[in-house]
Amino acid sequence: MKILVLGIGNVMFSDEGVGVHLCRLVEQKYAFKSSEHTVDFVDGGTLAERLTPILAQYDYAIIFDCVSANGGEVGDVYFFDFEDVPNSITWQGSAHEVEMLQTLTMMDLVGDRPKTKVIGIIPEVVNITTFELTPPVREGSKLMEKTFLNHMRELGFEIELKEPDLSIQSVANLACQRDHNDSSL
Image (cartoon, rainbow, N blue to C red; front, side, top):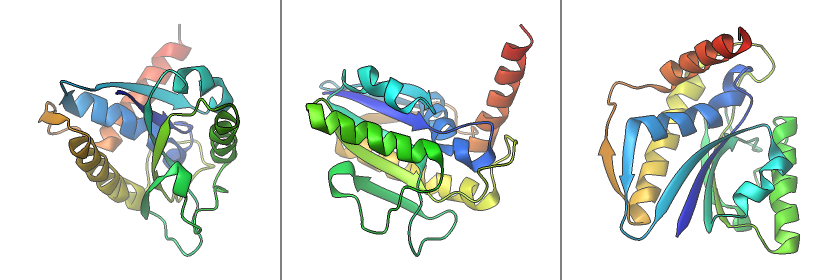
């Protein structure tokens, strides 16, 4: 099975970028080995519908993103199948969430959406320009990471820890440096 791990979010707006940062974190921190599956990691940013041709190439997708949920608190983590979204999930936290929902729904209409799992977290700050994640989201991202690793093991992957000291905030800080260096070219 060809698996895509897709990080969604805008890294310029604090917690809004948690999906992208977590995608980069697990790709750098771990090695994933399987005799029957492959895995690719993609920073999807806020591209939404432009990700359709990428998503369509895969059999299975795991999406890291922010979510909104009735009755939820900042830092709460949700793991669900896109075909069975919990009633509490509202998809109203930011424009890109709604666009990603619409993209996946459109892919359903033409039959090319891969089986999709979502690991989402309720953000606190999504409209202030900073690479700093809030404490509840940094803490919640640890559960997102653990949930992801457990699911990858369920899919048959062996997981090797490569960078034990890597944290989500250090990955976010590197994104800041990368973006700053890219803008100065």
